[in-house]
Length: 427
Image (cartoon, rainbow, N blue to C red; front, side):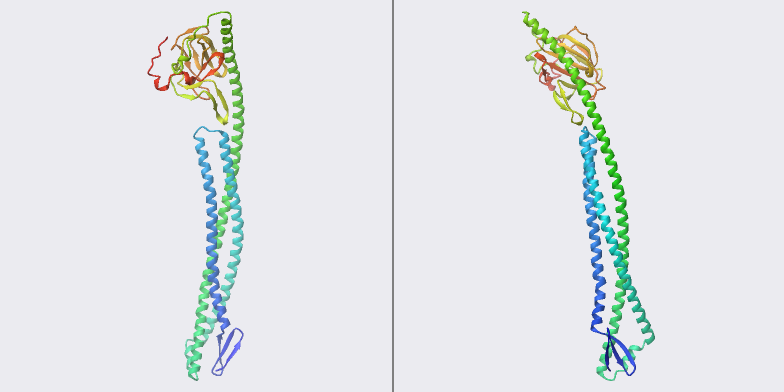
C-alpha cells in the first residue's frame, strides 16, 4: 500500500486500483476549529444581547421610577393647599425625566439598529456555512451509497499484512470520525442559524417597542409642556388678582386707619383742652381675659401670612371660622364709631372702647348696631358672613391700641381651654 499527498486530503491506495481519501492532520485541525467556532460565537452572542437588553431595561426603569415619584408628589400637592410655583417646579422635573427617557430611547434605538445589522451579517454567514456543510454531507452520502454497505469489510479483507490491516482500520476510523464531525457541524450550524434568527426577531420586536415608547414619551412631553404653560398662565392671573386684592386691602386698611386716627386725634385734642382722661373699658388688665366675639377655630393668625403662590398678606387681626349667621358679640362696652361696608372687609363694625382702645369686627353678613350706638359687653352687634371670601365664612377680628397700633388678639382673648369656664355677662 502506498500513500500519496493530495492537497488537504491524503490518498490511500487499496489494492491496485482503489483510491480512498484520508484526512490529513491539517484538515482535522480545520474540522475541529469549525466545530468549535459556532459554539464559541453563539455562546458569546446570546449572553451579550441579553445583557444589553437587561442593562437597557434597567436604565429605563430607573428613570421611569424617578418620574413616578415626581408624579406622586404632584398628586400629593394637588390634594392639599399648595403654591402653583411648586406645581410648575414639579412639572419641570417631570419634563426633565421625560427628556432623559427620550434620549435613552434614542440611544437604544441606535444601538438596536447596529445590533440588527450585525445579527443579520452573522445569520448570513451561518447560513452560507450551513449550505457548504450540507453540500459536503450530500456528496458524502452519495459516496457511501455508491460503495455499498459492505465497503468497510472489503477494505479490511483486502489487507495484505497485519500492518496493512491496522492502517486500513485506522483509515476507516478516521473516515467515520470525519462523518460524525460533519454531522455535528451540521447540527450546530442549524442551531446557530435558529438562534440568530430568533435574535433577529427579538431585536426587531424590541426596536418596534422602543419606537412606540419614544412616540408615547414625546406625546407625554408635549402634554407636560402644555400643563406647564397652563399653570404659568394661572400663576400670572392669580398673581395679578392677588396684587389687586392686596391693593384693595391696603386701601380699605387705610380707610380704617384714618377712622381710628381721627378718633385718636379727637381724644388727644379733648385731653389737651383739659378734659379729664377717660378710663377705657379695655385696659392691660384685660390681657388674656377678653371674651371671644364668636366661637370657632382660628383660620389665620395675627401678622404676615403666606397665601396662594407665596403671596405675603399682612394680617392686623385674626380670622375665626364660624357658620354664616352666627351671632357676633362685643368683647367690651363702647361706642359704635363705624357700621357699614368697608370694601373687601364687607360689612364691618368699629367700636371705640375709650382710653385709645378699639375693636374691629369685619366680614359680617349684617350689622345690628348703628354708628353712635352704645353697646355693652356680650351684646350682639352683627352676624358672621364672608362666605364669598377666599377663607370662606369667618369673622375678622382686630384690637387697636393707642395711636392706632394693631395688637395681637391672641394675647387679649381668653385661652381656648377657659372659654367655657367664664360666663359672658355684661359689665
